[in-house]
Image (cartoon, rainbow, N blue to C red):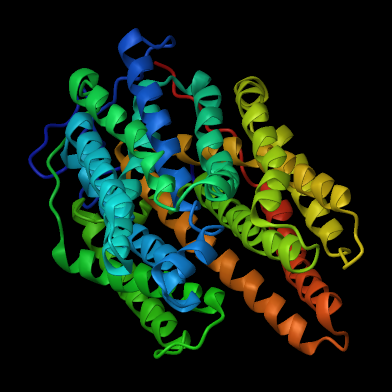
Length: 501
């Protein structure tokens, strides 16, 4: 699969001056895209900085609810199954909205897309903070998720538009901070807030930052992308919602570990069938450049391999983020605040390493980072398969920090090489694909680790904390075996060829 993907010019668009006429039945050459300058202008730095800060806030909010569940159950008099919906509904909305962002980013300018995203997120945050009960709180989380789903694809597409390929690693390093650190520090922040304040302060603390970003964007955000005519296929939207929504809901049902009215296999089956229909329809629509999610992105071998390794890495990250706190609290006896503080160093390490990793990528490419990074991730997961009821907490801390180092080496080159291998016309679709894979892989990681942990605990001959520890070991063993796929796939991610300007 080549990394340079020819795209047809939309119907009625003129061919580039001097371009040879295409052969009968062959796709016409796409109009040339002017490459961005080597140095960022002050306007572009403002745009990227504002998008980075806003995306950090919205993704931080995605994982802030996990530690808060016990407090919410007491305050709102709800069951654990109902409380899990505050996270499940958020992920479900993300999975439904993200595929549509490819259309939005093609059709609309930067500023209205940003204002819509932050407007939805700010409104949802206000609804959550003022919620009188569970129903309103759940509705607020859905509105928040609608804004969150738009932000990450918008950020990635804008960076690919504004930043020269020779500097994209550094900026993608900052995006890696958003992707990896925000979910890691979310439980810590919620643990600190809940130790001294009411659960509403989780939203009240975020609201001023979200509103400030919205106001600053309304005043200062320019339009920097290049909108073009694009049609929205409503049937693709419906089938996409059934496909990706069914997969995420089914996987999340497994992760909840609770009896539900609909068995998890039902939404999984519906999602898989709808996804097959969705792929078939996109393959047909993309011939006329009308696909909701253009699957020609996967004609790039580098993008395909990077997406596979990213999916495995996100599975490991989110699986660890849900199982490790359970181990620390149920086996080691830590409280939520202590658990959050123990996981904080790993998140900080990822944040500190991300800019360095970006500079190394710009200088040396992805291989020198990805291969050792995936090996380190795999080694840390294999190390976590040895935990027991008597494992020192310090050893768990070291294992988590090592895992964080490996993930820091992995995310930046995956984003940069994968999306950088696509032509300009596919950047919006590539960003939407990456966001969708993240959501599905995150749900899959949580479901896989929790399911295996539960089965391991039930099958254990031990009792009490040692049985729980055996379940945790089984979950990490599954993740460790899966991580070997990422190690093998990492060697297939190559540095994209930078076109001469």
